[in-house]
Image 1 (cartoon, helix red, strand yellow):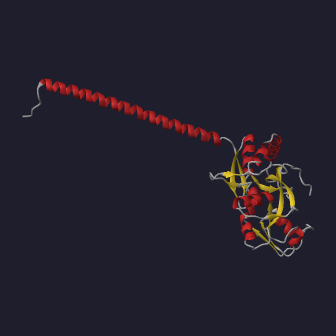
Image 2 (spheres, one colour):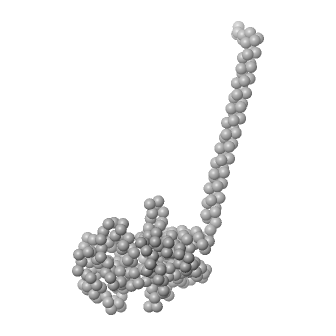
Length: 295
């Protein structure tokens, strides 16, 4: 025989059971409410993230072809693109209602990538001078000196001293064109011109004595010296002073080049361009004289 206890004991037990069931039911209700709240919060967060993403992607994207070229284009500590051209592009395109997408390209194939529609424009310390008819241009938005640099103890003090010397340049740049064309009377016959795809390779070539001189944008040489703690001497006479611009394909009739040119001029006038340049260079003076060369 199974003993169930007395009536009073069964009553107490039943009451305890009811209380336990109520507690359990209350707990389940509470847990269910918390679970619902958690789901709603997740949904809200997801919706907020989706809305933010939608808000970001709602702007039409402009694909910018660029090359690593400090201080114009480089990677910051947060592994995101940064530099003079990057900041100028973000500001200008946001004013115009576009979202920039920065695409590192094979610099030697830049024109083909542009004409094939792989990118919308080239914005990477790109010289207008001598290329006026090759592209539709926005700018110039700043000027840059193309210069020759040597090691401090070098006997090269002028462009004429380059006679019979080895010089390194980045491929498809204005210095390469100047040295190979032979049309600049100031430039003597060189022994060799080494054209390399990666700009940063020219500096170790100079430091190790493989070449006697290098040629590039002055700002880029100064940036390399700061970044790597090396010392070069820049010749006083520049190869060329150029205007920098943003290049669009000749076949691109959307009018973005015209709108961008107007926006860049507004930024120069309202002081934005000066402020951005001085994030990376000690002074913007001398870089804002943007009259086009006629030659």
